[in-house]
Image (cartoon, rainbow, N blue to C red):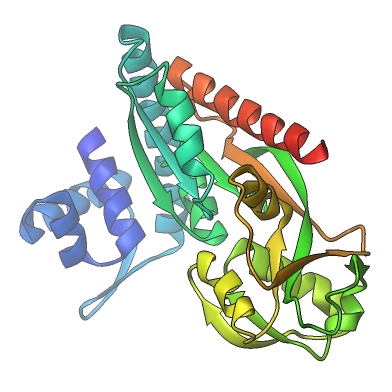
Length: 303
């Protein structure tokens, strides 16, 4: 059994499509088919059910794939460890986030001491991040809500309140704080489902006895405050957004921030990683920068 056979098998098993796998691996389909056939001959069983042009992992294939994933993961981690031991200044970090607005400050801080490190950053959903973490394809995930589960470790690095923004002419604008249930008849401008704060507030609203009526759903958080200003609806925002505005001495005209009486309306941010992934010295330094960044924000908000 050869390493190349295992790598080819993993790709075919993930895609369950020989033609697509051949494109990904940059080999001919006939060569790939022969390699998979030799692997099956070595094992003495078929790993796929072949029906016309369809290819599906069978019971043997699913069982073998789990072992192959673990074996190749360990080999890739060994390679990462060797690279780390032979290079202290240069390296590569793979990071996934589901909100990117804090990322520029974090990267600027890290690059002051590690200017040559290469980053591959992806903005993904929490479900996508979990899958890639478990496959060993990411160093870290920075996400809210935090990603937790088997094979993963997660450090909660930040907790913040959820606020409500309303126009200054709103019936509740003169209140410093409100109960969530008081908003059940309101129109909301919101991010689309799958965004951390949207899914979180949907859960909190459901506990309060209502489903938010969203008159706008989008992908860009920055537009929400403008839509509130325009009177289209009200919106939920994390406490750090108010803090960022105060640091920049930015005043949003015609908008009021309200606190929620419900103490459980908290958003958590976490750093997640695969529990068996080898962390290079550079990765450990970056993890420390992340922790210190959020510690600074937390202390500033409490002042």
